[in-house]
Image (cartoon, rainbow, N blue to C red; front, side, top):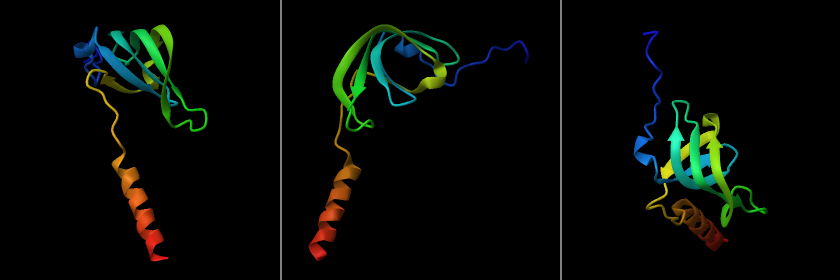
Length: 109
């Protein structure tokens, strides 16, 4: 058992040399081409682009970007890794339900 290498819980081999979107601790999001990773989930991303947050609402990511180039992400900061191909934004169904509830409550008064 002592000679066994620690294996990662996530297999990112299928994403090598493909576009990925990475969410980091603290709310930052980057997109680029995954060039490498290790068992601690440290990532090397080429042609990295950061999606900036809205200054008025820090929880909202805008379409505004800045180029970072080659990026090394420490594994402890990586929260999510997803393929960028086929990624699209959808409306929040819970937000719509909440608005409908407020409208229904307002009708009673």
